[in-house]
Image (cartoon, rainbow, N blue to C red; front, side, top):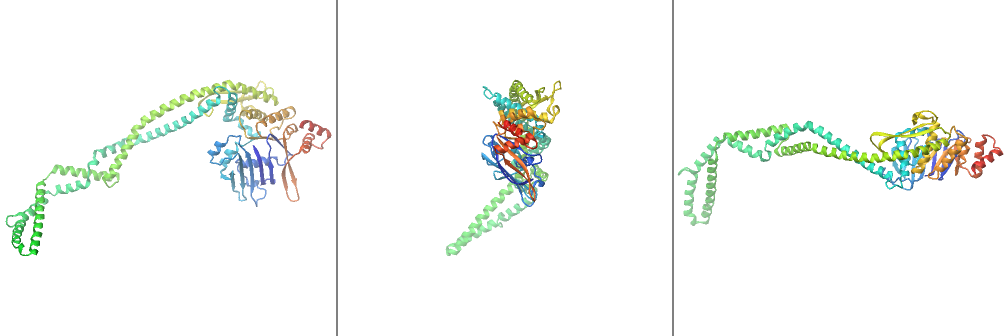
Length: 559
């Protein structure tokens, strides 16, 4: 409920603080006194856009702050969704700076207007003839019927709330499954365009046998096979120089080794020289052996040379084609292509599995939707009767009200069918959809009837009736007052009214007055005590000078 409101520098209000009570609060005042200003201020904290012209003094900011007791509205989950700190006693504040910039806060946390609007519509419902347009909306009508059914079946073994919860859980799965299936089909469509080309590239890279290729080794072998003759000539000459009889370097060194051996005993220095020569001779003999082995291995192999050149040419072509510089990069590219081809070829199985899952989910939805339709067909008659009873008491004795439940052809928030309220206020007239069936005043009374039922069936926020009694009087006004009184037992109700019958029914009474001093005109809101309230009702009855009869009538209404 709305506990407290503070308004600073808004329209005709300079500064105002007001505590609100539970139950039924009446707001009266002369035309033009500023009753709508209170609604305008509330609109700001409910997320409506600010108008700079609403600032009374443009040299200072406008502030509207409201305090709500929300412990009984089950809003914890919404606060979590909006990433807000939950408090049973929550504060909503709106500031409009002289620059025109607007700021919004919930429990001192800065928020966007969208967040404030999201929460605000769960806290206050401002009901006027204009607002009855909501009554024509399909989602509102479905919500009304659903709330009525949930209340009617709450004590059954399997209440409608259980079926609806199961349906909505399955509906989330359905939406996620559809989304995943759409993504898979999109991937399949995209990859199918690339599959042939990727397969070709992959086959080309696989045929290159990249894991067995070493470009450095191939290039070295290519050089050898391309220069067999010159390599053979060099090694032949080298070996001849080393091993030619008597004149070869090896023979000459051996002879020198023998001569040094003969004198090595004469001096340790000679022995060292001989040993060093022996080491050189051993190394040179090993070099000669290696050279001889290389000569034996050298053999022209045109076929092998052609194969190597083909492999090197293939690598160069692949480097240019894929814009890489080495074999490891080609191997990485090959593996990536293999993954793409594998995914593309495996998508078909995934799609089939997802289609099967979607069919199972839709079977469950159809079953649960059928249960919900059964609840609607069974209980809509009771709702029709209750609405008719109330609107007939509100001055439409010939009214007809029928709820049509028809297949939706889709999965909606409330099941697999479409709910439409049809109405006529006149005998013999055709039942039509609400936006075509009644005048604003008739729809306003119909909305009052429906909201009175909703107040019993679900936890509604604070509701403010803004002159919905326009055009009615007498017994109908009295019946409206009784309905509001009944509603106020379940929720906080406020009503802006010009009718004394309605004004007298509240347990609290506020009056809006316009006051003019030497400088400016102000609007004020005051709480009336018992005597002041009697005078206000008497004034509303008399329309002028208050007579004793008017006071007696006012006293009778208040009692």
